[in-house]
Image (cartoon, rainbow, N blue to C red; front, side, top):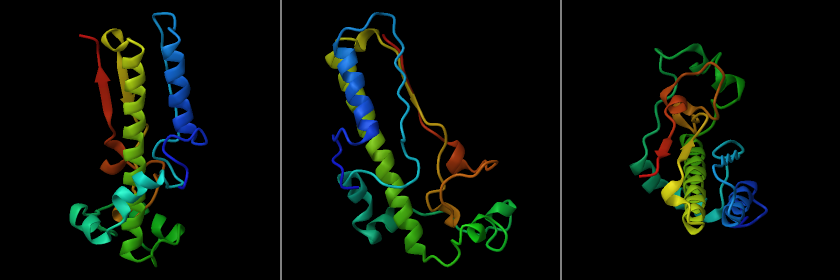
Length: 173
């Protein structure tokens, strides 16, 4: 995306920006602040500096990341090249590099979410609330992001790339 990381055109950044302003205005305590965002969901894309962090050098990416192999016989039918998601989504003819590009875009989105979380924490600290505020951060699910030559997530799928999600919890003191 050509939208800057700190552009209010980006809904996730705008939510963090508004949350920081709300925190700076001395909210009544106790409070609960919940931010739901697009996060690392399709369509794949992140501000350029986060996207380029992972996608500029395909050789370096392939050296750092090993995608899980496609069409493993022991996997459920939805992995099948003939009757599964790859066939349904017409993914079977894409070259290997296409799945690495998807993975790079996904990593860029995850990196951008890390940045946004950091910005929110800076807002908590700047408001003087850090030492008395519990903070939790998680995700609803992962993404195939090119692993198994699949994209997105699929209902009923329980692959580790979908179920292993971050959970950050910080309690005061």
